[in-house]
Length: 309
Image (tube, one colour):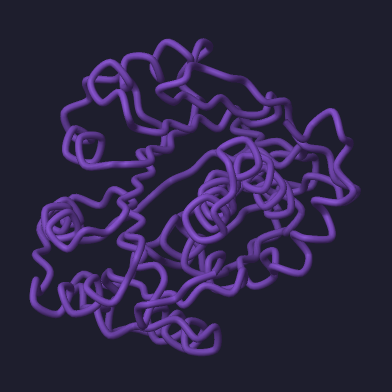
């Protein structure tokens, strides 16, 4: 891997404290006023999973975003410092640190309740952000509203731009328009789409040279490029699926670390992304034990040959 810059990747997005709520019967009883649950707090959200994921794979990582001047924000700063993540471009949100509540089902699925605090009203310091982006090769964007202001800057500086537009409802969604237009590599969750291929093809009609990756949960993933549309089955690992939080982030981290920094083909990078995503699903209420580069290399050798395209 050639490293001509001080950093490899700048993650631009939201990080916060997630609270996972586990129900003893594996499902929510909304007929009862009170439920006895197990509630676990941890560093989460897309910015948390991707920053920590890139760092665990050995990439020099910076996080660009907001935290509150509160206990949650201080905890995240400490965790990022322990991971070696650069927080030079972490600013203060006066409304506090972002939070998510995840109702967890027995099979690892979730129902998410997200509080992004001031993200629709914030304006980051562009010169501080420029200083971090200029040191980086890749800028990976999540989609808080303020992040769109950094897209032209990343483009001007010649970075590879990837964007995760998450549970996008339709190709022409106005909120995500900027992120779609600037992305060299586009990720989305197919949770709202029975036929994600149609959405991928719509994106490629607008930007034919884009790489578009759709996470399809237990059904694997779909990838669209100028060469066409392909579907990949889910990867099976020994550890059971216990928590799907961060799975899409793992797919993006595994793909980008392989495609951008290791020079892997799209096919090989997708397989590696799926392995990282599947490992993430084996981690219960935690972003502290994501896949390392050594673990990824071991797992890639154990995947059946028919899945390696």
